[in-house]
Image (cartoon, rainbow, N blue to C red; front, side):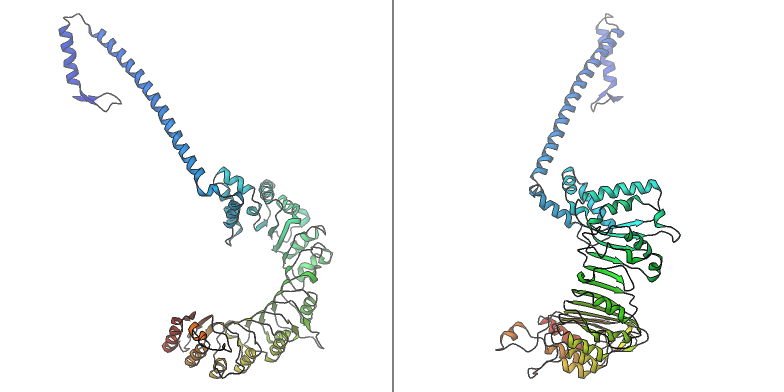
Length: 523
């Protein structure tokens, strides 16, 4: 039988040990007794145990010393890491850049907490970087228990304190039932937000409009010192419940520049200082004209135009001397609304975007738009989108549209429009052209167009306005038109429409090989 002592890796034979002890006893002639030998063995075991314990203590001490040296090495590596050499200001900027990607409020909150929990040093830097905690917040103002409300308020108080004196963007989302009264519902988390009203940079309301009006009515007139943008969607019914004319805080906001409202909103506004305006649910042309005439510094405007019964008599010209970007969306039976543009003068307008979703299908108001173009001759970017081909633009009207846009450089057109050869020939450049159409056009995007049988004419038009660098350098004088910087074409051949031909694709591939950025896609 072979065995080993507990904890030992050495094997020994019990038979050999037994024989050894028998021989020892016989050699002693009976002078040594077994109990005496057992005592000696027990004493030896205790002695060995004491030595083993001592060795184990030494090993534990050595292990601790080794682990400490490993920690010291890791600390030294940490101190030698390149990121340790970054100034705190740079590290703070990196933290802020982690929040640069657009996303939900919750992702912003998670990102801010994540960088603050990496290590104590990063936590210190994060807590002293107010920009990290000044992202957009959405406050859900639904009914909760007092305990929950107090917990939410405590967390919000800490969050707002971390952003120090930074301005903040805020969305208030109301969920209360109609039978609930604002005065009977007190939310601590809302009180925390009101305490920093002077820091609001942008304010957006969601939910019942009368709740928003009631909330604004409780703010002091000098509360919104930093407010730059306001989004407030109220209806006539909302204003029947709460008189908006008594709300003074918005009109007194000294920095307010951007406003998004329905045209029926009667809250006093600082119209004269606005530079950006979004208008929805416009009732009449008079209502729209009244608002725009009070906004002399307007730079950007986004307006939804429904069907109107135009008022009788002469409508004064609306002059917007600073307007640079204009977005007009036409819905329902929109051509009557198109007459609005004939009453608009925007001499420095650069970017014009037109969206049409009309029922039933209507015709382009050529006379009104030509009148508008004659007063707005600085347009360089035109985006024309027609949903489901619900607006028909005759070829002669399309030619007139381009003829009155001498500075046009970027043109985007999305519709089921079927080009005719005559129009394409007008756009085709030849050296003999004394006054070419849209001479500065360099970026072209056509979506959902019908090529029909004019694919070759289309290819010739594109080819006529493209030259390689070598070709341009070889000419003693510049061309009368700009060359393309990019061309994007999407052809629609559904419902039996003719597909983009292979010869057209070959022509575009040849132009692409010569350096033109051109993309052709069929749907």
